[in-house]
Amino acid sequence: MSSAAPKAIAIQNAINDVMSNDRGRLLAGLISRLSDFQLAEDALQEALISALSHWGRSGIPHAPTAWLMKVALNKGIDRLRSQMRESHKVEQFSFVTSDVAHPTTREEIPDERLRLIFACCHPALEIKSRVALTLRTVSGLTTREIANAFLDTEKTMGQRLTRSKSKIKAKGIGFAVPQSEMWDDRLNAVLATIYLIFTTGYVIEDEAERDLCGEAIFLGRLLNDLKPNEPEIEGILALMLLTHARLPARVGADGLSKPIEEQDRSLWQETLIEEGRMFLRNAVARRSPQAFQIKAAIADCHMTKGSPDWMQMSLLYQSLWHFEPTPVIALNWAVVMAELGHLETALKKIDSLEGDLSAFQPWHAARASILLKLGHFEEATTAYKTAIETAPDAPSRAFLAAKLTAAQKHGSNS
Amino acid sequence: MKYMLLIFNDPALEPSYGTPEFDTMMSDFFAANEKMKADGVLCGGEGLQGIETATSLRIKAGKVETMDGPFAETREHLGGYYVIDTADLDSALSYAALIPSANFGTIEVRPLMDYNPAGN
Image 1 (tube, helix red, strand yellow):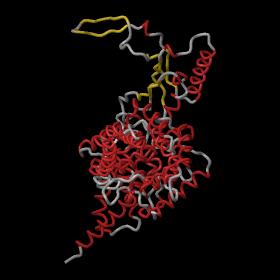
Image 2: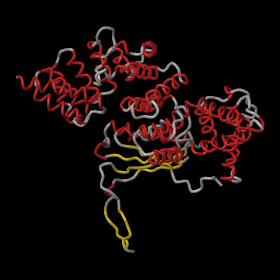
Image 3: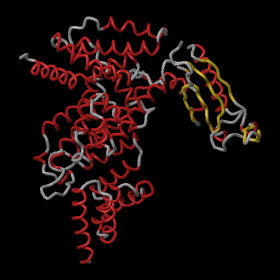
Image 4: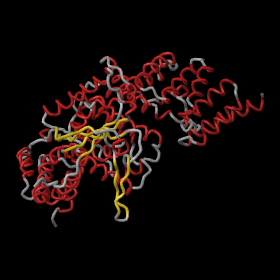
């Protein structure tokens, strides 16, 4: 008997290994040379099939990633050739074969994932497509995993991905790191995409097959590796790490969600907090404060030893307002005002936001809490009921239900 | 890749003739034109007269119908266009940002249809 079966397993393992470590890097390199997302994906797929038979005959190459890169490129160029026949366009691709003709190590493949990230997160694509494309292409999630995370069907998500890839081509979105005059705008689009992945994971982490918070942190770290010393990248990393550190304490033993100031701090993940604070310190030292850094600083103040530093948070919201004068920031600021004891002012502020936020669950929850503290029990009861109806998950509902009971009890006593 | 930059704006928001703002707008247009020419990306472009000069036509049941006025009554009108040839969308957007009307209107950036994608 030959050792065919163990050999096949060894090859499959080698392929899985390359794909889990280097898929993004391979795709980025292929897209950058072939200028076509779909073609790059298909070419990589074909190269994987070749690897199965070729490695079986000749053994696993000592630089498997580089081997796949070279073969996939050739497959892609072959396809282009057959598409374009004698077109002169083929000539511009001919140099690429020599580029990777004699690769020896993985490091010889330039890491072009930064360009890939900026293409996937181009603001000319709608945000949901940016999220899907980034998770598929950069993070290597399957279409089904992405569909599950966003409560879509696999078919719908597949169509969205296909549409976005052809949009990139049709609109002429380049595969390039943006120039300095566009840098801020483009970086914001990338960060918004990553943060949406994070917040999506934060709300529905029980139902997601893969941990989207973890994926978002991975993307943040990758971005920071590829483009170090950018304060807003450090800022978003700090914000995500500090938020993620509190995850185990978010729901108490009683099944009720816990506000940060009431959480059991011994459950917070100390290493994540340390890392988050380190990124925040680095960012602040660069003296270019922007929205994510300020939000990270607010998260940090929420977690100060002893009790939250509400005064400092109020000042930070004031600076955040310059960058994001949105109703949601106004709401959060009002909540901090209430914590500082300015209940009437906070309520007035919150009521003035009704037109913008009456469909926003946290607005009802915040208003209910302040009404309760002010002793307006009847109004608090109504507000809590509305907040419960639209609460995002069971622990939040349970928390609000407990508050509702308190409001009703006080209401009937008065 | 060729792009058309379609300039949409609300004439009510446009600086009026004779004001310093109008002069700034015109010199900004001039500067944009010169830059596009100097960079070798400009294929063409024109400004349009107001929508009160527009005549619209459609054929219904084989009969030509001609009407006074634009295709659609909207606040923002098509006021002019450029056609430029650039490497990618980002480059096209950077030229679109030079058009002064972007300050009070919208520049829609649309790739032209490529009837011969293989380039033969």
